[in-house]
Image 1 (tube, rainbow, N blue to C red):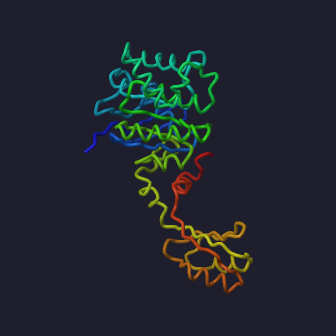
Image 2 (image 1 turned 90 degrees about the vertical axis):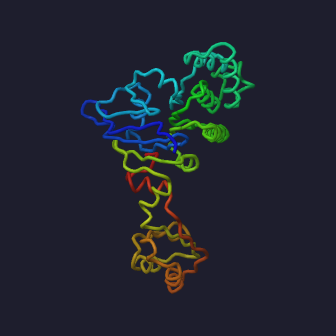
Image 3 (image 1 turned 180 degrees about the vertical axis):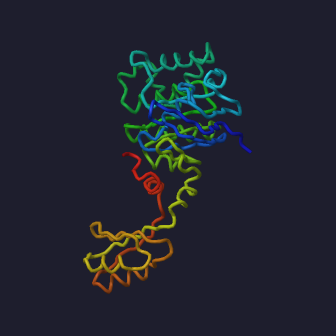
Length: 313
């Protein structure tokens, strides 16, 4: 069984009258890509700062790599890497000099440092730009250098906070490939993102935070099962008449029925409404159905159901 890399128990952090983290408990096992989702102000960043020892908590416990962590244990900190949301690179230093600086902070010296710099530049796809300053880089290149600085010391646990925000698709895909390759090599990763498709594609386990609390956690299938009592049915039609919508909305099990262009979209109790019955009702009201699909709830719809907000609100 994989060891537990991160265990938090009932973490609480207050800022005067505001409870930023409210009895948050997380468990992250070795080798996971762990997605941490939540709208702005949910408590994600505060939790991450506590895990890095940069912010004291008011109560609760943190265990890292099976040992109690109070924020002062340098040996434990040295096993963690971080890719912050805000760029943490020096514009006036070259890419190589940036990485040598950050490697030196972890006590890496000499030939080993040179090897790690070469490795990090290769991973980031910046080898040919090693002598260039980041002020000449695109936003995506800066993000990749930011990521390289976080993995220069080969951390066992890598925390990536919105690593692809505001960058071009090519750089985003490169960073996602880096996450996959690092994880395949054994790195445990905590990943936060406002891009739900990234979390769905990368993460083994996902926790959703809102108002400082962990309100749900598990695999994507686990989370989807929470709202799977409903299903979404989409009918593509030739024309939509008010009588069609009225007839369908009156069917037992239909919760919502609305028109979007040449589509009728319904939310219904799972297994209570058959496609054949819907098509029959449409035809009876002079509406030809050209296609019909039953869609499984997405991670986005789970998030919206649990928090009442979309991830980018």
